[in-house]
Image (cartoon, rainbow, N blue to C red; front, side, top):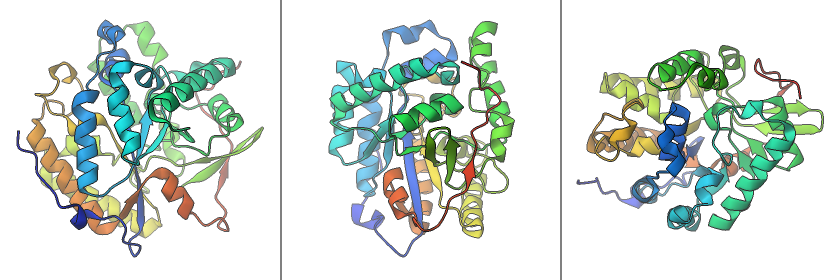
Length: 341
């Protein structure tokens, strides 16, 4: 397979005259997709890290980009993933917490369970990468008042779970239709991807007002005003129908962000860098019937557009650019799926 080579000097993200864009990747492994999908095959923890992590690192290195990797603690605890995860830290990318067990029903956890979950992930990630994490994103965008309180008590700098997307219920329905989940498992996962009401939260950074203090939230960017997704998996999915439509949609996002003064925070997944020939077991995931060469061509094209317009950086680097004298809006954490403990 011929992979397009690039000149790193062409893609330098250091141009200070450009507006900023923060970039992150949820490093979900094969087993975590199978687990959420309802397949018992997840229990052997199958991994594609040896394939996809070097590919992602090469892609970003060629473009002189640093991003934030949200790592699952269970993966960090397994020796077979040690080399791949160590390479992420060695390449200078930010490393953050994506839970230990990658269960999208994290909102059902008690505070004690959340503390245990986060501690296990923190310990495993630091042991594998040498990095003490400062940021968190819930699996499947699972978020609750309790999670925010626990993150604050553990002195996290930010949460990046909020996903203000009007299509959340449709995405969940699509996923359920393609899954092998039982009725009980679907009930457990009923908050997967978030609710319709989540779409009414801001796209720009804000602060949660908690009983114990405040916590910064950096939402995954959706189309300003319209609140439809703009993450790369969605762009690839659109390109499966019309490449022109996918590029037009990306350029519309750029225009809307400029008009609303929104600094985009865009989301990647490992499958954005994998084709059907890499793993046929994941065909249930949108666009995983696409050949690798076509998918990588799309990704290069999307990044060509973005790097012409933005200076791309990690979440932590972006937060460092925020004006401390510019007050952020405050919100009380109220979620439809919050439960009493």
